[in-house]
Amino acid sequence: MTENQVGWKERISYGLSDTACNLVFQVIGTYLMFFYTDVFGLSLAAVGTLFLVARIIDALDAPIFGVLIDRTSTKWGKSRPYFLWLAVPFGIMATLTFFTPNLSDSGKSIYAYITYISVGIIYSGVNVPITSILPSLSSNPQERTVLGTIRSIGGQIGAIIVTAATLPIVSALGGGDNQKGFFWTVFIFSIFGVTMLLITFKNTKERVIIPGRTIVPFKEGIKAIRGNIPWFIMIFLNFIYWMGQTIKNQTTVYYFANNIGNAKLIPLMMSFNFVTLFSLLLTPTFSKKIGKKNTMILGLLIGIVGQIMMGIGGKITSLAFIMAGNIVGTFGTGFILGLISVMLADTVDYGEWKNNVRAAGLLTSASSFGAKFGMGIAGALTAAILSAGGYVANQKQTSSALHAIEFNFLWLPIICSALGIVALLFHRFDKLEKQIIVDLNNKRKAFKSEENSKII
Image (cartoon, rainbow, N blue to C red; front, side):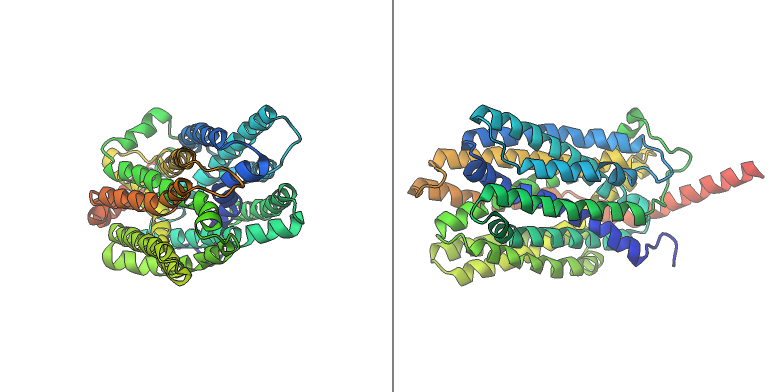
């Protein structure tokens, strides 16, 4: 095995970390708004406010965890121990989020705030380390791309299970009682998620260590951001991409139940998420041939084409065209998911190269920060648009409400993807990558030689 090469047992264990997170948190991203409005009993306005407040808090906790990771020094490493410490609390709080207590409307609102904010904070505690550990697993750029791809494949497997199986499992376990069905469904998902996070902890190893220092103080870590243009672009990309995806996911149930008129199609449509696996497998090859930036732009363009096809299918009432558009868009998603964490890992190298500071925790926490802030804005924006359109839960919707659902599901994701493409046009890391890796390796070898000479 060559230097910094990661074996398959460790690769798969790393991938299971994202399977675990998606198996639990994908239920929240896809079904929680529907659960709160149509099952739990909160008003649309209350849910919109909750989502915005919770996500703003969540966005702030990601950098805090990043700083904590940089200041962590244990026999297990810096990022890895968080999988052990927070796996069980994550599973417990996720299950409680989908529990419906017998309380007044105000009591339910308070309960929702406590559980939703808490699960978001703990999610950051297990999700930020998934990204921050990547630069420490290998210094080989192609190996990182493989690891990022395997992570995304694992995440997509979790997402596919959730999107395709959640409603059928809710129906089977609830027996007509959605409150009961959602609780036990999320409980089962949480058990598997906790187990996978513990497997990730057991089988991964942090092998790329910053020379001379194991703890990076916040004041020093912040220097890694100075002039780090790739980092700022990745923050924006995470924000805008996940805002678009969350808006689409949150309104999928509404769109098929009301605009298409058949909620039973939802598991079928979401089951096509497996198509993402094909583009994920192609991601290392594409990124090697045309570069990571261009591969991600390609994914965003394919996603836009898929959204337009679904819009046309809705207008001409063609289920086949809607399905085809969904498949096309889903294929494009793989190129994006396979590279987001990898390109964030690149910003760690860039910060060390440009500013002589390696702050993996702080810089890669941008992934969770951007995504959560985008998801928070998405929740508030979705609720505001649906409310403005006159959406009323469990009622026949007006024409304006249907237009509001359509705009959320189809056109806002297109706008977000287009903005992501514009941001990536300014990304220049691919051109500098070879020189950066050479310079960093030379610096580490020089440091090691200097340390050895001191010992002698």
